[in-house]
Structures are given as C-alpha cells and as structure tokens.
Image 1 (cartoon, one colour):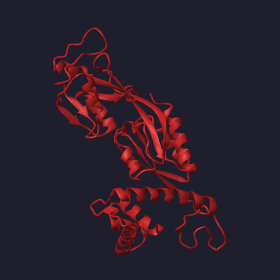
Image 2 (image 1 turned 45 degrees about the vertical axis):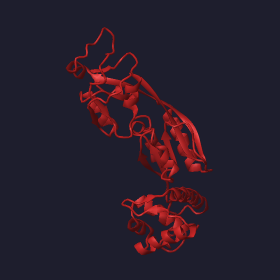
Image 3 (image 1 turned 60 degrees about the vertical axis):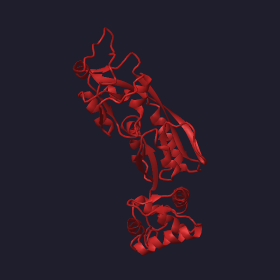
Amino acid sequence: MNIEQVKALAAAVDEGTVEGAAFVLGVTPSAASQRIRTLESRLGQVLIRRTNPVTVTEAGEAVLKYAREVELLESETMDRLHGIDIDAPDGVGTDAGGAPGQRRRVPTVLRIGVNADSLSTWFRPIFAEVAGWDDIVIRIEVADQDKALPLLTSGEVLGTITSAEAGGYGTQVQKLGSMRYVAVATKGLLARYGTERGAGPSAEADLGSLPMVNFGKDDDLQFAFLRRAGVATTPPMSVVPSSWDFAAAVEVGVGWGLIPIMQLGDLSQDLVPLSSEPNIDVPLYWHHWNLASEKLGRLTEALHRAAGQMR
C-alpha cells in the first residue's frame, strides 16, 4: 500500500472530511480524494463512507489500524534517527547560519479510549505524567467501558480501557483493577416516594417507580442493578452524560444512580445506599496493540501505576 494514500485515509477519518484531510496534509481536496480512491481501487474495496463525518467500512478498519501502527512506528524511528519531524520543511534543525542547531522534537500522538468515570477519578495522575513527556501527546476518546472495544478494532485508538476481558487478534490485554459503584439516593428523594428507612444505614426502595439517573444510551450499569433487584420495568429516567454532573444530579435528588466509590467521598452525606447490597464491581482491562513500542509501553506502565489507586 502506498503510504501517502494510507495517510490520506487516516487524515480523512481524523478530520471527519476529505477537505479537512487535505488541509492537514497540505494538498488540495481533489488530491486527497484521489489518493483515497486510488487506494480503494488498488485494494478492490470501498474503505470509507463519504458521510459527514467520514466513517470507515469493515475493510477500511483494517487499513486504518495499519495506518495508526505505521504512524506510531514511523514517529519512534524518526526520534531515534533524527529527533525531527519527517515532513519538516528545509531549514528546521539548523540555526540562522545554516549550521546544525537545536532539533525540533515532534511528539508522537497516542490515541486512547477511556470511560468517563475512570477519566474523572483514578486516571487523572496520567495527566501529570504526560506533562513531563515532551515526545508524546495523548488524544482521548470517551466511551462507556462496555462499548469501548470497537474503538480498538476499528483502528481509531491504539489502546482502550474496557470491561471486556477477552482481547482481539493482534492485541494484548492486562487487568487494571476493579471500580466499585454504589447505588445511592438522597433522603429527600426517598421520602418523597414513600420509602421508609429502617434502623440500618441503607434503604429498601421501590426501584420500579423511584426516579433514576442514567449516563447515556450506552450505559447499562443502572439497568444491571435493576435486573439484579428483579425489576423488569423502566422507572422515570433522566439522562446526564457527564461523570461529575451525573453525580451532582443524584446528589440533589434528580434520581438514584450508581456512583463510583471514589467520588462518594466528595459528595453530600445526605446520600443513602439503596438496599443492603448496593455495590456493583466493574473490572477494567487495558487492551492495546501488540507492538514493540517504547512510548506505548511507557503509557501502559503509567496506567498501571495510576490504576493502583483504583477502588
């Protein structure tokens, strides 16, 4: 495969349009489009859907994954050889007189998938580590832990945090730990819906009618709790697709919800656990490409250090 054609496809996916790809590649839109069409013709496969934004077909996923791997390995190779961008214009890396000067280091882009609750809790120390790396930048795709694996399969990211234990072809899987979620509601919400608290610290509520907060259409955690409690109906439901705002909505009584135990310490003491078994533990795994990459290895080590604080 012609590498410039492969890069044009990856740029179109990154930017969402062929025109955007042309801009970042420094070519005309027609040239970028021709590169992709020539690649499709050579492979005998349609690789992208010309939608807005551009999406990849099943065949395109394989080529996109290849493009990401080439991008990472090319960047690391150029670091070792020159420490400058392979596409840098003439004169970069020299001083005003044309003599060798300080070389510009172009950081490698590491694209990763992270679920919102991890991003808001135990993942945060990763930012402090990345701040000390002048050869890496990270780009994060937020996806629910149950739905993140397709990001890796499609080639959109080189690694992702997911609750799935089994990995795919050409990937490595490492367990990071487990996040504990606690089903809670405010005393005021429970009182409004006629729940009488017993002498213990928890409350037995009618979950079929008690309003609920859900994170979004991909979040099945609240429904898993309902199924465990034997509730087959859907209660009145609000949707708040942000980790801390979700917790804030539960904290003021919009509805009950499952909140990471790592967040509960910062929330109101007015929250009451629902039932005597309010906990759900979600295991998290780090899936990443099976590449001999120092930078990917460095990120993996940082993830394990940060995940050591998970509970």
